[in-house]
Amino acid sequence: MKDLYWRAISIDSIDPDYFPSVPLFMKTAGNYVLYKDAERKFSSADRSRMDRTGTEFMYVRAGDMSEISTYLENSLKDMLTRDDLDSERKGRILYQTSINYLVDAFEAPEEASNLERCRQLVQHMMSYLSNEPHALKSVGSVVEHNLYIFSHSVQVAALNLLAHEKLFQVHPDELIDVGIGSMLHDYGMIFVTNDILNKPDALSDVEYYKIKQHTQKGYEYLKDSGRFGDMSLTIVRHHHERYDGNGYPTGMKGDQIPRSAQLSAMCDMYSALTLDRVYRKAVSHQEAIKAMRTEAGAFSAPLLGSFLELMTAQKE
Image (cartoon, rainbow, N blue to C red):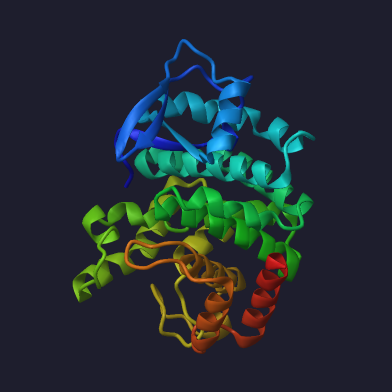
């Protein structure tokens, strides 16, 4: 589900004073060229050079990611409270760190069950969203350069935490479960082959059937671990139910669908529309609103109206 050898790292995540001493590469004409070796620190002069040239990302070998992820997760609390970092940079660091976790979780089952690691990231995301009025603006520059499924999962978590807090006034303890379920809502995609996930053309009926199984399979896998709460599991299982009963996996209808699953479905669709996909480019916020309003049977009209108002307010 990712490049086996290389991983993109946001320049915002590379602090000259603290970033681990690992080789950093630049991507030129499809080739990875060594920028600095492990013996040399990434300096403030390097950072200034990247800013001048408009470089947003550098690359590291996949084998160095464990050290980098540990550094970012251990440093995240301090980074998010630093006065010398602006809101958008903090957001990009947060989203980069979350994407790193998700790549690990999708590749190693033991990391998916590492609930404390996921919980810590969700708590940091909750804090960031509550303190930054336009927190969602910073996600774009990170997710555009990472594989869709991980980018999408991080954005859905951010949207869902914000929407649950603003629209449902959910208690912070419950919000953590919302965030965990949202981060892992597509976990069942690990059971879908890459040729289907990355197919640029229309899916066959058989391929679409396999995609639709991801909700139930992800739910069963995480439930069997015995570590996830009901709210998290509900989001994983039911985020593709439709208000008219034509969704999956159970075909629940109307308010039989848990309200967290209804809201998760809106976050899922909004994110899917506004991020680049293998088979189509992202659409604008206004185009996404129009598309969601035309899906009359998919959502509760009053809840959809409230959700779209919230998303519009975030864009202003």
